Image (tube, rainbow, N blue to C red; front, side):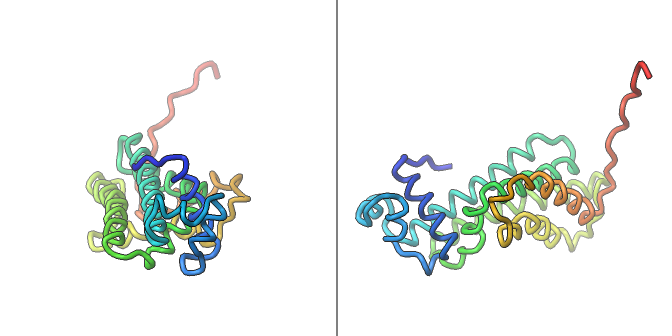
Length: 206
């Protein structure tokens, strides 16, 4: 992930908030500058256009969401745990970063080339993580997804987190863990999970 100076970070945070509230088309560079406590000219020192700002916000969000899923994947040792860990992590990321996620997911069409291709590549990388987990689960017998449904199932699993940004309010972060756990249970049903946790060791002294 790219590192940003404090000044760039302020501008990006302001842009994400403005785009989330008013959309890309309804936001001006002046709006962003005011939120960041900068002049419009100062914004252009770091970013050449409003669309360049949108790309920076979108790339930051996509890379952070992808990193959350990669970190979750790397904690798991079987396909079931890998998939459910990624669903849980992706859900929490979208809930905890709802304003940024709203921009990331809904302003893709405002990007121009080559920015759009860069973001599309990050989306494909994210989707491939889920496809790989489903295919590995099918191979291990943990899952039961028809081969021709793997890609569509992966998209549906990703949508469990993505669609949250349409309605979730950051004021209700106390509900985040419960929503993430619900999405995990839904994911298990969607892939026809046959996974059974290992039996618990017999308790002693009772």
